[in-house]
Image 1 (tube, rainbow, N blue to C red):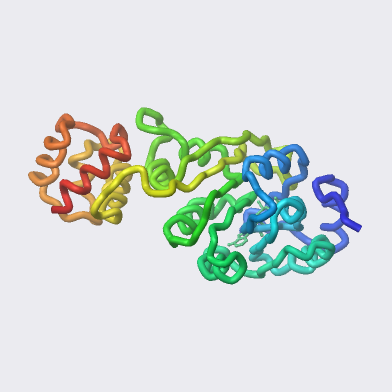
Image 2 (image 1 turned 135 degrees about the horizontal axis):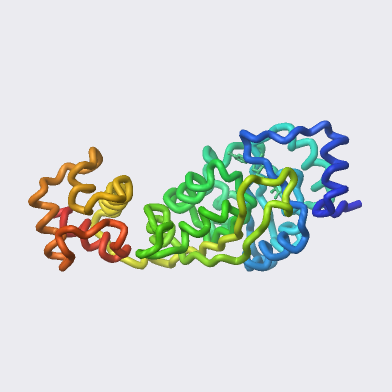
Length: 287
Ligand code: SAM
């Protein structure tokens, strides 16, 4: 019989019966609120033909709901002590494949080929917060076919992903995420929706991948190095930030000329530039 795991009593009973202890190092905060689970599932826009990749299924609370809507679910869990629990809670589902692996080491491209004929996956997760950025950037940069990513993250990180120039939260993460996807904040989630309660607020963010990048640049790598250098020294002018970066090797004159050609003031700060301006700057410096 299927157990409703979003009921906190049921979650606690399973955890106790299996002698499971939460591991902080794996960012384990399990969801125990069915309304929040419904919101995540709705935001992910899953259809019966979809393959979903769930990162960190925990005891399988969200996995069950995903399997009821999608054709196939691949759930990747690093913690070996959760595998016997998942075998029990997901026993009645034939369309779930649990992988005992580290998501950061997994070949998502291969997964999409083997389980989805190479077609794009949808990623859904209540993420382990300690590796939010490497997971999301890894999914985008690997070139694996990913249609959208709907994830619970720390509220502050969700804010950073969706803002533009002029906000104190604007930074390298905003630009990197917006280069690959259109962000949309689906819900704010308070700490009491989890066991144990995290020390921070959370939010569900949906990242829909652009069919092609919103800006064109001849050297994407250089553009991201320029972005990193600009925000590493946020309080410096763009010119000094780029000149001081060990990742770049431009002279002061080259940088000043590029900034002038862009039509920006000599003392402009990197935090005021749009993605399009960073793309143009990288094209000017790449020659
Ligand atoms: N999905 C469950 C839920 O909502 O109740 C658990 C979410 S919990 C915030 C994060 C999950 O990710 C945990 O199960 C944790 O063990 C797992 N995890 C942490 N690091 C991981 C990694 N590198 N690869 C795969 N899973 C990981």
